[in-house]
Length: 280
Image (tube, rainbow, N blue to C red; front, side, top):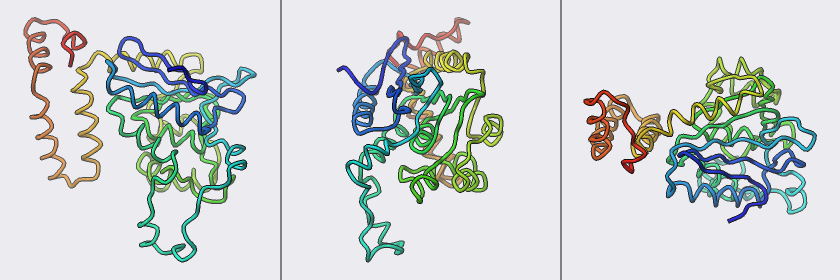
């Protein structure tokens, strides 16, 4: 299937998804969201271990990840529906609402739960829905020229609706999250690295090269092993220590099979295991 608002490629167990609306700061339109969801849905059935998400350069050549939702499109189709007046301010009422009302929330959840190792390669503008996409990835690599912020409060007068408050807090802690969310100012890439948002900072011309290097390391691992490892880390985040340990033991036991045989045989023969040929 051909896409208009994203570019995609798959090679050597690595998929690359490029947000491709250069004249609109790669903003998330309905079309882009639909195309992205379609591509993500296909990946679990492909021989792919890693997904890199990045953005196309602007029309003038300046780098850009994504400026978030397409506000022009939102203005044309109307704002997102608000809770009923009788529910505003009632926690139990808000909890009763469907948190995935609207496609952007389900898209972000789809990306976050993708059973692949996901890398956001960020340069230029990355704000609002852009930072939400980045937070849904397992690791984030940023260029020295990246402009990472959250502009929801400044532009819309309310917090973002795609989970940014929860995901950013988990990534950097409540203090840094509140600072970023309430000031709406871009953060220095080196600070982003120090507080845990970014797992690497690179020169702009090296960003994608480094992202592909990291992807290549994970691409050669056992496919089932990568999926199980990611699932274990994600699941145990909300567990007690005792529950997390028990769950990790169960996942280790569930990971036995042909990948174990492939790895053990390669180790005994003092060579690198080739999981790509074992189908695992």
